[in-house]
Length: 167
Image (cartoon, rainbow, N blue to C red; front, side, top):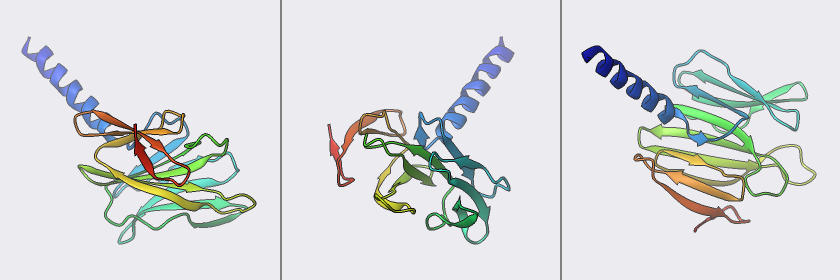
């Protein structure tokens, strides 16, 4: 009985830690990297570009973009982040994919920056940014859920200017 109880507690802890890692919930085209990792995870975006994550002291976690044979920093590095997650998703329902870059800056703080590619341009530009407690979820209807440490969420509408309005 004690072994079963111990195993149950261990599984619960492992599940809690693994589910607590995700910054951007519910995405299919996503990649993440934790601090001090030697991996180089990448995702291929619908526009043909590739996002590659890396870690190097003292720069921290870096988000690089590869396009047309060239590699360049997609955004500023995250020297103090514990984890970075990148996803591609149509946040505002305009039919165009945005790039979402989420960073866990402490055990109780996450931030997300959303990048759009303006019409007739080749590079993405930061559209909006906001901070949360645990994670974000984008249901696909122009809204975003911000989760707290207890798993409770607040629902917000992402406006055309990138600002959030509580629903």
